[in-house]
Amino acid sequence: MAERDHAVVAEDPATVVRTRYWHRLDDGRVQCDICPRACKLRDGQRGLCFVRACQDGEIVLTTYGRSSGFCVDPIEKKPLNHFLPGTPVLSFGTAGCNLACKFCQNWDISKSREMDTLADAASPDEIAGTALRLGCQSVAFTYNDPVIFHEYAIDVARACRARGIKSVAVTAGYQNADARAEFYQYMDAANVDLKAFTDTFYREICAGHLQPVLDTLVYLKHETSVWFEITNLVIPGLNDCDDEFDAMTRWVVGELGPDVPIHFTAFHPDWRMRDRPHTPPATLARARQIALRNGVRYAYTGNVHDRAGGTTTCHGCGTPLIVRDWYELLEWNLTTDGRCRCCNAECAGEFVGPPGDWGAHRQAVRLTARGRPPRSPRGTT
Image (cartoon, rainbow, N blue to C red; front, side, top):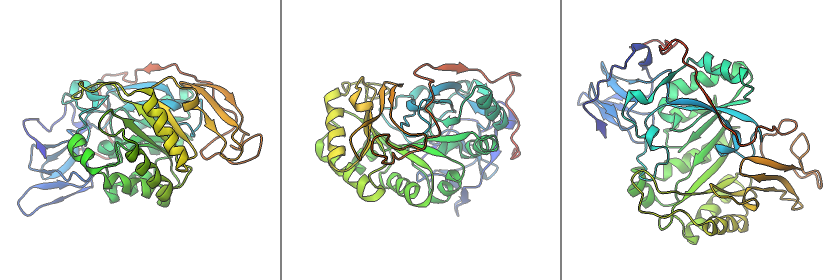
């Protein structure tokens, strides 16, 4: 699928950079190989994601160095409950997406086809420096999927790593193998959105397929040291039956092991799915209980007020290890190296010293100082 009628040339040529994951076809088109969508483009066309386009016979990224905005969030908002709990994360996204989810809850960013959405600009070094200055231990690529701004995300992650700052990908996991391998060399943590456990849902609701997402999850578990957690947005009448929760969580335990946290989060009507009701809290609680019964050690509820569903419990003795109220940490019963203070059982995750105390507040950050996007170190087309 391709988009016509959009000029490839961005507002500033510094935002257009060459990419690697593509190949030419016999009919003169160029195929983008960043994700399973495999958009086949002629000059002047953009892929479904909007930000990758065909220019001069090759695929370029058109939004390098541009952002829809920056904000300091609690790391738990990503959501990540087992990665540097209580700490602030500098979050940002760009525009566009390589899926077409009818329920998208960031649609003003991910479905944007306007460059005006990208109102902020920053080089990788500026982002890393800002994170350090604001006391953030990590930077998150979020709001839309970093898969589509692969080159920019990697350069930011490299700049962050040089300063001791972690990188977090919030992603749908819809990515091809070669690009995935390069991408996760530079990531420290991820939250992968497992939208449902049927290919029918992915085809009819997201214009994608399930298997590439499962492949990404298996890759993360068995081929990388990246800490990752799973989010399942539960939509009434579409992916909320007990059989699906059962099949999904059995697969997770069987293929990924019991230590991968799963967040069952509440849907609210949005974008092109305003006819569905909000997810009842009881449905999320039921999904969590099914996951626990199937051997998932860390199952959570999200987007609802549920202290029990936000609490991390020791799999060894049942002690509440981290008690949360939304994004606030109320109790902490872990040692500095992430073990239960009562029975010494290890809690899976990345814990460095005492927890942070950032809490639930958010802080908007404006990085653009000169009103001009930075030139990419990769060069321009």
